[in-house]
Every structure is written in C-alpha cells, then in structure tokens.
Image (cartoon, rainbow, N blue to C red; front, side, top):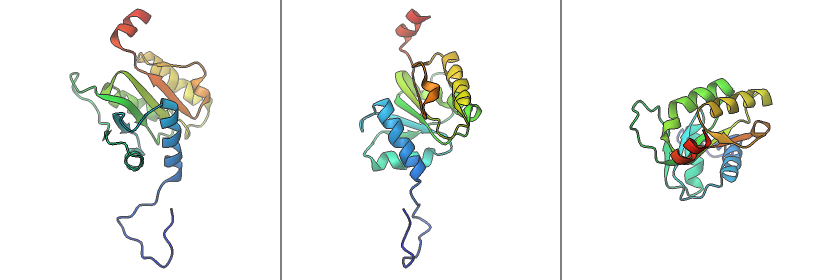
Length: 158
C-alpha cells in the first residue's frame, strides 16, 4: 500500500508485500488453518509472513529456527515456508526447521517463485524422503502441502 506523496514516509512504516499477502492467503486456505492454529514461519519472507498472520488474527505465531537438539519442542501445528526461489533453497530451510513441526502437523510451502514444475517435483521427492506425505500432483500447484504423519501412522505405512 503506497503512502500519499504529501505524507512524509516514516522509516518504521513498511509497505505491504502484495505477493506475500497473496501467498499467505493461498497457504492458509490450502492447509485449512484457523486463527487458533500454532504456526511457525521460515524462509526469506518469514518476517513479512509473521506480520501478515498477526494482522489476520493469528495469536500463536513464531519464527521457525534451526533445531540443534533432538529433544526440541515439536509444537507447531503448521509450518509455513515462504520466499524460497527454488527446491534447493526450500529443501535447506525444511531441513533446518522440520523438527519444529508436530507429528500430525502440516507443512505448507509457497512454491510460486520456483522456476517450473520439475523444480517443485524435486522438492516433493525430498519431502517424501523425509517421511512427509503429500497428495499426488502437488508439484503442479503454487503451494505444496505436506503432512507429517503421527508415529503410529508412519510405522503402519512403512
């Protein structure tokens, strides 16, 4: 949202990133998230995404961080990854923060900046390699939604 020319621009007022706002709307709709969902956000656009979530009434929002301890909290029901330019960057972010996602949780990746569906397909294969489940044809969408199975569900499917 642009400021009128007659009003001096404050260094503390940021313009809304329309692309990030649109990506947040798509990811929230695709992941069926509600304002009471515990959300962790990672990726180059994490700060803007956190602000967008707060404006939408989400109260349990945190920045995802690289997990260095195997006993780290796994309490996020939704893990959003935004702003990655391709599968390699998204894969690195997912590797760093995936332990924050609770079993049974949802991983939602904005793939709108990826170059093509083959790049998204590579990311889907990486997610499957890490035990995440996604629907067939997910690489054709602008958002990749994956599910982290519960331990019992994972052992039955293996």
